[in-house]
Picture: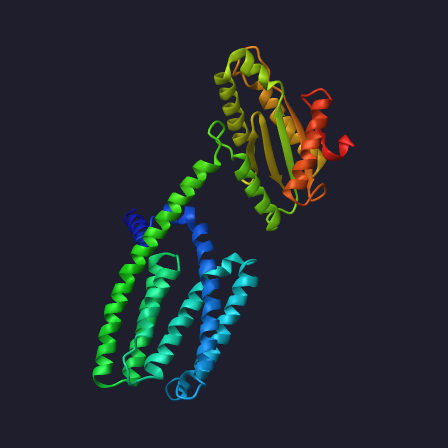
Length: 374
């Protein structure tokens, strides 16, 4: 029992260490926003780093400058090619392989620090090194990740820098570089912890604001604009291979508002939203499209019978709702399949809306697949 408690305590301590400086829940909730910022930052770093180093390579060939910069010429040229190559990797590979993003960000950060060590204590042993310390601060501001991981990179890189100083420098220059490394390492660790903490808090607030903006107040489903954005993104980035887009309209809903008042209508809409949320999967996109209309994107459901089974399930639950005594709520449905009936949101919505119109024309409390209304 005591051994088990110690193991549990060790796991808790390790988790606290891993998420030191950042709330674990906030990190997990906003990791996608952090990764998006990392993608943009390091794509820019690859481009600007490659261009800047290419320019320095050319400048190092100019008369009067080749005496000092000439020793760095091949280093500049080599790293220019590497950074431009990394920019291409970010642009074309990382977009399709998100799991590679963070390791490549750390790889590029390491390359930046290696460049600073090479052009500092390795090739320029006579002067004080400053580039390495500048790059520590740049990386602290550039990457968005757990402070512990970034701290490990800084400590390892600083250790390599100090080793290069001891091997290549002598006298006061060596002492000053070692002292400066300790000071700047400590400062960069403090700064990167504060920066990461603030960035993740900003992401949390951004996610909270987006959630409030994108959530319908009555039904807690997505709003029309938010739902359209999400569905468009899923269709465009290939996350969804096949799906059903369902348009749902509550039949004669105006009668509730006219006969029982708008508060009763609001209660009914809230109950419908809650019912849909309970019936469907987390991967399904549920939208209050407006008024008494709802829109559902159901991934991996592209067969007529499957879609009709989903609509029948909704119809049964609507019939069992007793929000208003003696009142039975029905609904009409229109369905279009992706990619059979359309490859964009606009195409799918147009076809599903036509099918919905056909279902209501048939007498309401009905459903229609797009091709059936032709």
